[in-house]
Amino acid sequence: MRHILPILILAGTAFAQATKPAAIPRMPDGKPDMSGVWQRPFVQDMTKDGPGQKGEPNPPFTEWSKANLVEEFDYSAFCLPLGYTRAINSPMPVEIVQRPDRVVLLYEMNNTFHVVFTDGRPHPKDLDPTWFGHSIGKWNGDVLTVDTVGFNGKTRVDTQGHPHTDALHVVETFKLTDADHIAYEVTVEDPKAYTHPWKNTRTFTKRKDWEIMEYNCNENNKEVMEGHLKYPGAK
Amino acid sequence: MHRYALFCLFALGLVALPLAAHHSFATVFDMNKPTTFTGTVTKVEWTNPHAWFYVDVKDEKGVVRNYACETGPPNVLSRNGWKKDSLKIGDTVNVSAYRAKDGTDTFSTRQVTMPDGRKVFAGSAADEGK
Image 1 (tube, rainbow over the protein chains, first blue to last red):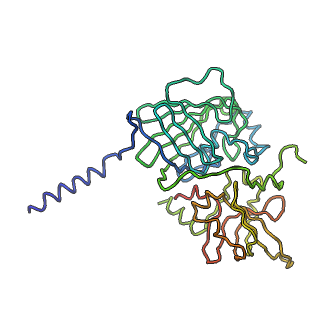
Image 2 (cartoon, each protein chain N blue to C red):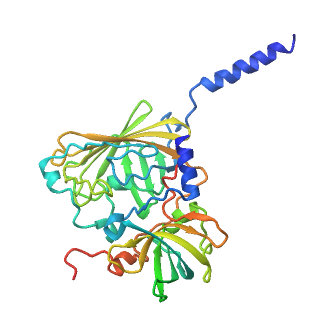
């Protein structure tokens, strides 16, 4: 009989541990700490679902978009920057390095970095358009919302080639659901290309066993160097 | 469960999607022309943005042709269990691949059956559900 009580207590503790929400790592200031190497779904086509990915099957194309669905120039094959959303979609991991005043994304794909300012600054008023735009982040409770504008319009939304313009505005949310998973959402807004915003939702998985590795685009790019792909205007 | 099942399919080589992150696969390779061939490895290039290996293959006329076979890049292959010396010159391998649209002896590799019988997925490990 005297053995039963400890067993009940143990069982009760185990039950409590199983049902309690998993603890998430936190920064000294109490914000969730997403630092680490993350595996993400490789999304070639943001209209499609896949493991860890929910796409938008019917992007609300404007007339301009419908006329520009075909990508004439496969810019990424020529090692131009992928651009913001295609870096997000890329198959190789991203390392997140977090500080109180910024979140830094180190993309293995093309060894690209991107800085998200979380120190309260606004977007600059007179922003030069760039491949990756300008990002500011805000914490609302445990959710980080990242707002990015200032794109040059030279990229495509995904490998499939869905279009966007320089009016692109990307809003992302990151939420650690436990120590090893981020619930991620990306909303594409571009009034010139889409009649209303549309989104994808994804799950990122922490890979403590991975390090970011080197990847470059033009060491032995035979498709280009041997002419299997042609630069526009090339004979 | 779904992810595990998908992983098993990949591991068995039953599902192999053509994956290329830096260009649209369809602009170079013809998904409608999957093919398999057996040949002898003549060269391996452990390079970015894709690793390549080359195999001497006898065509239907008995003429030996050197096929250039594209795979994922070294980072992806490493995480998929390949090493830079996994394929050795002189190895006989069976290759499942897509031919380039321009008709050259250039292929995007779906799967390689190694000399020891192991079947290895040659593209991206990223969405295997691992």
